[in-house]
Image (cartoon, rainbow, N blue to C red; front, side, top):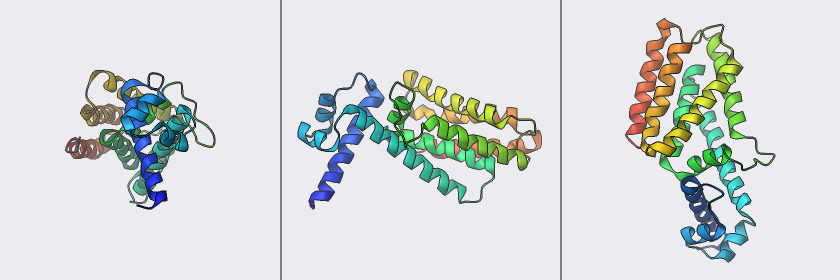
Length: 216
């Protein structure tokens, strides 16, 4: 195996192991020695790629941000309405959390005391700005009540989304997250969407929940 490919695989293994431990035990309760043992690598291999535990946390946040932005761009390119795009992005982020530890660890790191280093932007700020733009688009498309404060609603929606995942992680298995995302949207749609348009979006939420529960 070429040396560069082997180094990339080792780095990915370390990141995944760290993400799993950060997700299960928290950043402060996880040591570099724990990560070395969990990744089945030497300390030298870890220090070759990461000088400190903070660098590992930053790498996880970078991967989460890059993956989320790529997923959102892909959804944007499919011609969905603004509200449908926003709903699909939240289910996409939920799917990432169900399928692997990096998205789950990224959420726990972002919600904790780990500083997000520039030029990386805080994921909650990115999500809020994206949601505000989609909600403004949904107002123009008459899918959301015209008097909705898009910025305030976006902040509340991200808080709802993040908060439900934080609570769920503490009290129930990760496979329950598709249901929680769907519950969030059922409540939100009934509050934001005019009655004649609700059935379409409630049906979409039910469809996305079924698809995600099939892989959870």
